[in-house]
Length: 206
Image (cartoon, rainbow, N blue to C red; front, side, top):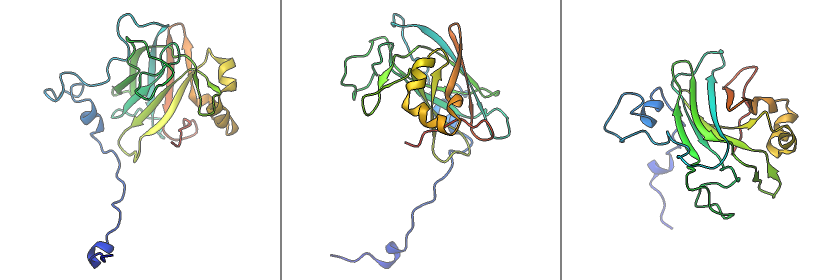
């Protein structure tokens, strides 16, 4: 077997880098005032007219370790439809609602806030078949984050299902399960994501 040149053998892996201060501009250029890249920023619409299910508005706030709003972040979401079916080529349990997209991408404003319209998802089976409580997965990218942070937002009106959810059970062991619960009032759900600090949201290692 041919030997590598000595200079190649000495090369090391490049250190990981943070997302930088302009991640929200690159991912949502129209929202940032840069037009001509896309007709519209991808991911702004999670559902279409005629979608089946209970419509809700989700209001999210992203907060840093100093209790300050994170104004230059982007949050991507994934969820199942009202019947617990994902709009994904990997979904083998059936077809998702044709008016359900199930994925979205939203930049935070200067107060670290973002909002989107969707439907409340149905329960979905976990890796070993046990049902997971209805939830929306959220991926957060921002300046200073090496790798995007993944969490879930569960619903405060699903206490019984939440008590049986495996992911929440693990977060409960460290007393952090409540950081993953969105507070529902009527057709509005409010969810705060704390990146660090005493109230730090439970993030998933996947």
